[in-house]
Image 1 (cartoon, one colour):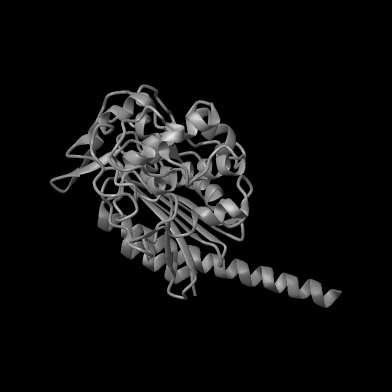
Image 2 (image 1 turned 90 degrees about the horizontal axis):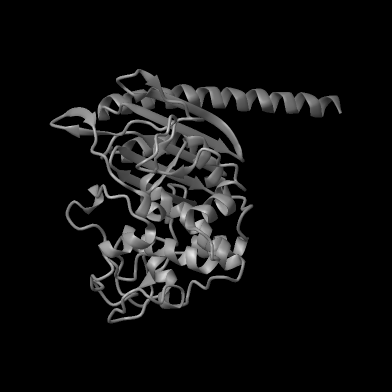
Length: 351
């Protein structure tokens, strides 16, 4: 018995030492990354086996006011990581027998203009339906619109290709999926997300990026102009919330990411649906499931992820199911190049 206690103490001490070493190296790496990319503020949270092992804010959420970043409280635009949040809502409806991913869009949104080809919910969610992405500066739209009104931006555009034959990333497809969720559940989309995803996962700081509401916890949103970091233009994201319009914290996103390791809100069957690659051209894998990218680590283990980019936002959510690791990185600057930084973080964590 005494030997078991000694071994436990030794294990805890060794784990603490490893975490301390990781934090030291990761902090140095992050500071260098921020300086190189001129990032005003960054929040990062890492969990392992469901427990946070590192959570830290760097820099400022508001440069002018010298307001420091808090990983628990500072809300960033998560941009396209919103798709992953919405994917869990789709899975919840599947579990409740209110949605079939293989059914036509028109079963759930019958008033959407008819196209040359029919297409399914799965094809929309997997970016193989042929729905277009932004044209020109549409991502800078600053008109407050409902999700229904937001369909007007793209609803009359023809499909780019026959559904199921190509992969073409589309945030507008996810606009459409928010209407699907609303109609299938017979509930307001935002109410559904809050009640069925955010509240059960204790994501208390995750909310829609409302353009007409002042949020004291929200960061300012910065862009680079001629090498100088300045405030970005005002944009309205409510109408495209499902694909890119939620605010969250790095700690909230880690809570969410663990749903892909130990599901609480959705079934393991539905989780499998989300994390299985779609196929095009008679079997070619797209490496994208439903709201999540599917890759491999250097050790050939599963790596799930989604990036996000918007006005004043560059974000990343990384999930390693076998290693039981989740990493959430949020910044308040557009067009941040994260690839090398993420690779170095992985080298510290994935041995």
